[in-house]
Amino acid sequence: MHSDKYRAALGCLPPFLMFVLTVAFPLQAQAAESALVVGINGAPSVERAGKSEPLRQGAAVSVGDVIVTDAAAKVKLLLADDSVLAIGPRSRVALDAFVLAPGSRTVKLRVLAGRFKLAIAKFFGGASDYEVHTPTAVAGVRGTVLWGDTEIDAICALDGHIEVRATTGSGAAAQLAAGECVNQMAAGKTTPLKPSAADLAAYLKEVTLD
Image (cartoon, rainbow, N blue to C red; front, top):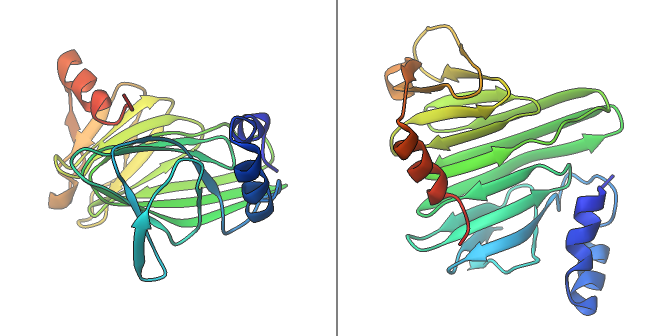
């Protein structure tokens, strides 16, 4: 159940590559090939089946793949539900689950290290279970935009609402509205964080492709 955006992304590719991707990435929801690389800076790589290989523009990303960026690389992924994931430098992000069915959506992303921005497409087909895991926290989200950075142990809601809970400790989950951030999840807390406009602009620049 890929959308017009996904079809448009395929349409911008060379005919041969479009044919290959259409065969490997059919226009219906799959648990495997569930994202398309639509932007790259530098030379990122993907780890799959115990091997590392260069990540190319137009490549399909499957459940179980780990996207890896060095200090000069960034990646932009279009997920099959129209969500957009931007991965900044010095990052490792895994797609752990992607199930898109007529009545439900389940997506699990794991940010092992680094920084990211995720714009989640609204889902009108039924229940939506979207989670982003970091080494210190779990963010539960629906249709919204969030940003995070494991180096400063922070997560922000840029649009909509998200729920963030630390993976250690017994504190209550934090409910974040647009413009609100938390950090210190490694200490079992969700401490409010108020970055300056300049700080926030710098954070976002880190995950924006040139």
